[in-house]
Image 1: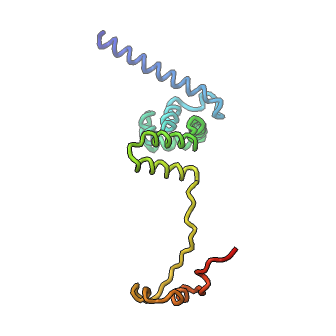
Image 2 (image 1 turned 180 degrees about the horizontal axis):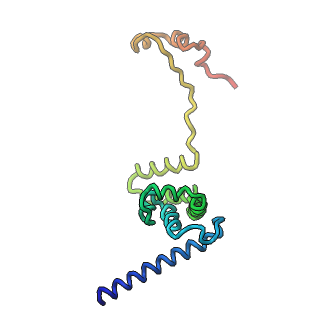
Image 3 (image 1 turned 60 degrees about the vertical axis):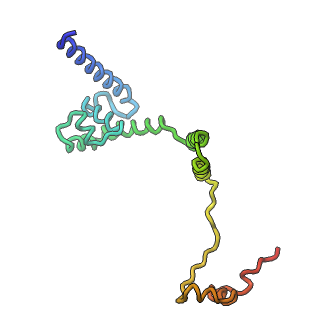
Length: 176
C-alpha cells in the first residue's frame, strides 16, 4: 500500500468517524430540548468531550477552539448547557452504583482476603456500609482542676464524686 493510499484511507476513516459522531449526537438532540443544527459541529464535539470527563479547556482544544476563553464562552451558551445537562443525566442513569453493588464488592474482597486482618477490615467496611456500627454513647465527664494525677489517686471515691459534681449514689446501680 502506498503512502497516498494509506493517507486516503485514514482520511476517509476519520471523516466517517466524524460523520457517525455527528449523526449519533444529532439522534439525541430532540431529547435535549434543542432543535436540529442548533449547535455547530464544533459545539457538539465540545459537549461530547466535556461529557466524557475532560475539562472545558482540554475539551476546547480537542474541539478546535482557538483559546480556552472561547471554549469557556461556548460552554456557557444555554444550548450547550442543555446538551451537557442531558448527557450528565444520561450518565447518572447508566451508572447505578448502589449499596447492593458495594456489598457484593466487599464480599468478593472478603473471599479473596489472604489474612485475618484483611477479613476484619472488610467486615468493618460492611458494618459501616449497612449502618450497623453504633456510636459510643457513654457519658464522658471532663473536669479541669489544678492538681496532679498523684493527688487524684490519693482521693477517696466520695471526694472524687464531689469534684465531679455527683453525689455518692451516682455509682450505685438503680434497682428495677
